[in-house]
Length: 121
Image (cartoon, rainbow, N blue to C red; front, side, top):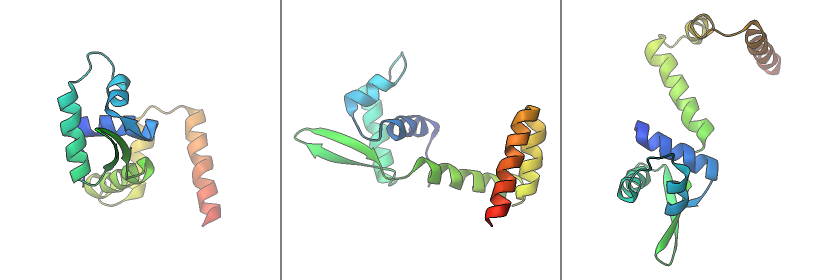
């Protein structure tokens, strides 16, 4: 299941805060802040999708993520590779390294990471 852009924005706030009440979520948004009802609607959708849960404290709810950020984005990257690069990680890597204006140092760091992963496997 996937999140909308607005839901992803809210999810990023929750991942950063780990758990938060409605007021904490609203405070984390830049001005102009969304309406409380907008955040409540997004949270309801995210709960229904299984991304967020909450604990009740009287009439207040403390929200927390059920999905780890790394897992969510890993699934997206794998989907991107499958759908746009014919399920070829090397096509993705070629596109990524040629089209993102990486510096020589950044490319060397990527090479180091890949070399380490090769050794690990």
